[in-house]
Length: 158
Ligand code: 4NP
Image (cartoon, rainbow, N blue to C red; front, side, top):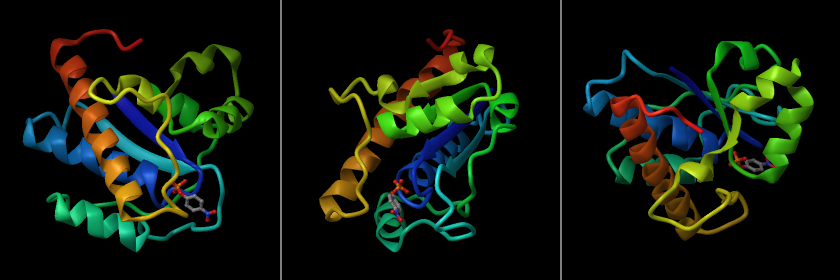
């Protein structure tokens, strides 16, 4: 299974979700079974580490590794099984980028895997406060727990 998280800048939400899911998979001994990555729809921060506010929030929860910003590309629709958008704008941008209509089924809202929080999107914390970064991590932990449960029980992801 290969999962790609996508947000706008790839420095706040999607790298955080990538880190949370990957490190939780590692703790469960499932790191080999699932590939996790993230990408952005804009290129302003190419090559950058996640935003310092997000790195601080991740560290405070015990997460230690993160990737650098990259741009999402049409090839990602072939390379990943599940492409998880953070909000409706990401979803629209990804639909436009998708190279073949039959690959659109891979595209979902990440928040659709949240069960402890009643949310439809993962809101952009970039212009927000520390609490907004914490909220992103709360949602990333919620959806990661459910994705891992689905991987473990091999429940088809819908
Ligand atoms: P992200 O947040 O999409 O969660 O990474 C943002 C990061 C940067 C910008 C906007 C949102 N920006 O406009 O530079």
